Amino acid sequence: MLHKGRYTLIALAWAAMIALPPRPTQAQNPSRPFSLPFNVPPGPGTWLVGQQYGNTTGAYNFGAYWYSAGQGLHFGIDFSAPCGTPVVAIGDGVVDQVDNFSFGILPHNLTIFHRDLGLTSLYGHLLKKPTVTKGQVVKRGEVVALSGDPEGTCESRPHLHLEVRSRDYNIAHNPATLIDADWSMLSTMGNFGASFTKDLFNPNRWQTIYDQPDVDFNEARLNNYRAAWPPPSRSQPVPQTLPAYTAPPIGTPTFRRLTEPGCCSLAWWSPDSRSVRFWNGPEGKRAALMAVGVDGGTPQPILSGPVLSPDGQYDVRLENGRVNVLHLTDMTSKSLITGGSWPRFSPGSTRLLWQWAGGDSVPGSAPPQVEVWVANPDGSGLLSIVRQPGVSAHWLDDDRILLSRREGLTRTSTLSIYTISTRQIQPLVTAKSLRNVSVAPGGRHILYFLAFQDDRAASGLYLLETRPGASPAKLPFFGGWRWRDSNSILYIPYEPGKPISFALYDINTGQSRSVTDPAEEPIGILNGDWSVSPNGQYIVFWNAKDSALWLVNLSG
Image 1 (cartoon, one colour):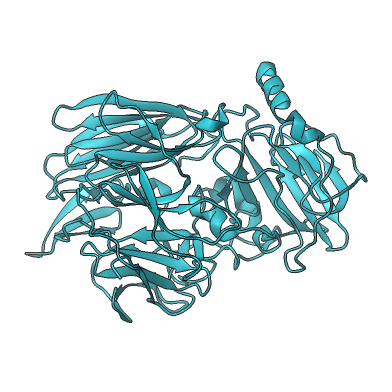
Image 2 (tube, one colour):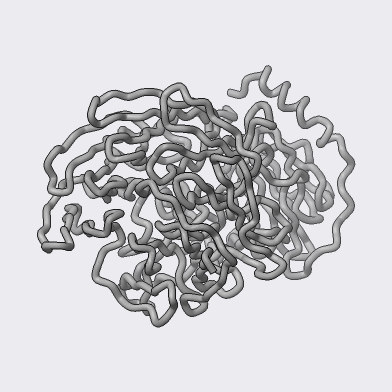
């Protein structure tokens, strides 16, 4: 049930926007005839892309719960937004259905038929029943509804679910190919479902926001893969934390293409920063792990697995639910029982951390019990860290673990620090809509952003020292980021409609500076897919121009 007092505040906050007359129908791009479903620009206080259409990681993990009727794919785009955000028609049309609950997407929904295109747009998880009526003519940009929350509480996962279907509703099309928007920039924040699951027997299929298949609601599942990457969410390794280090100075960046067009999404770095690794192979044959050097050349298959220790001395393998840790110096191997979960090495490569979930962590449902464990590389020193519903873990350093826990079906999350040597937990920060936590090399600081705060000015990116009693500091920029070293951040200023560029922020001086010039080297990045090498010298990104991996050498 929605609290009446809260609804009144929402209504007053948006009243001015709702009262605005419809914007005139805009000149349309013939190949992308629709506009975005909001009349305010994106940002941490307004709306962000939550999950793309198609073969997303979210669809792969939760398809059996939510998307089984849609061939296992996410058959719309989710836009995260506060409850009560005005939703506008994405094109001229006629209202076709209001609150047709055969579509699901509760608590309220709306469809608009766009006769000239032979397509229907569908808007779901609305706050209340729309006031428009069947047969009413609406214009592109006209407010037709208010965004809501599937649970109807505005405290669980408020968002708008948008679909584009055929006239008979049997086929769902990819909205990203029909909406005139800067998807490359919109994807840089890397929210839930930003990337796409890789079928290891066809690793380059359905990997961009543009090449996703249509969904036929009368056909069988499309993503029932024999082997996939990333692995299912309940068995994925925790995020990597690197040892403390200082990167070399930045010179004049140079660019180099590393792979052929069409390859290879979801790449990662070797521990020594000398090569980029990825899955690749011909259709129908299981993909191999490949590596290409930072100097270019022909990619070559490698024998190591996808998870190595930061010092490069250990290789982690997961076979038939059992983890084998191979010491690469003497080629000895030790086995661990982790319940089928991938472990991750501590920054100093002295310990392993993994988490085991008693079920899938399905958004909108009660979180499952999660167990967090640590052990030495040889399996000794096994220690249970915590058993709690909805908890997740990051390494801070070899003695400290950052624990994150969301409180039930709310937007409130708490971060705390577990110290292995003392076996004590100390709270760090509690906040609503806390997202995208990342740990600096060495673990002294973390970054996260707060979305959709009651005070919109409080929404944004925050830096926090990992000591009890430290106060979060809101940073003077917003955008997708990666740590370059222990004291600096590379980021993409979040400015939809402008070319992508990289900038550098020094956490000690509080100063930013540009790293690349879009006038000299315009950049497009697919799926927010980019990463920084462990030594801070290189960036690898998946180029939107040719779907190839490109390297930026920051030293010139």
